Amino acid sequence: MKILVINGPNLNMLGIRQPEIYGKTTYEDLKAMISAEAERLGVAVDFFQSNHEGALVDAIQQAYFDRVDGIVINPGAYTHTSVALLDAVKAVSTPTVEVHISDPETREEFRHVSYIRAACVATVKGRGLEGYLEALRLLAKRDS
Ligand code: CA2
Image (cartoon, rainbow, N blue to C red; front, side, top):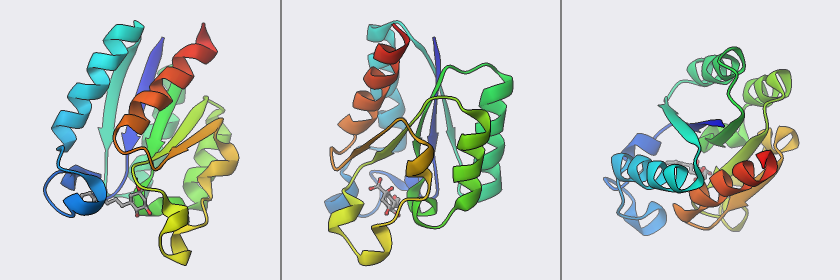
């Protein structure tokens, strides 16, 4: 089983800024944590991060052409704005889990809507970086 973990804008800043919201773990540490869990689950994992909406759409489409079995995505702020990401996930119909480190629904009103959610098989939010591992486990379980 192959899983692609996609992170959207500013998530490359993990551990560098705003530790009170997003924690002290860096993006590189996060990738290592996910890789360790993937190994434990016996799944192959790949990573993509971009600050650009179109590049995220391209990565979702590429996952389809690469026959990826599942996508874990934290679309960052594009969660609340992007019909293009929603359409991309719908188009590929690859099982996709939406992850948020914080719980956007307890934050500002503009974070309460998620466009991509409608195309996802599950949403994990407010669990910190552990949420990515949970999403990985959800996808691995669906495949077994
Ligand atoms: O809680 C989440 O994971 C979010 O998807 C994070 C987004 C935010 O726009 C969403 O509403 C909720 C922001 C990501 C910014 O990441 C940073 C990480 C470290 C330092 C600064 C920003």
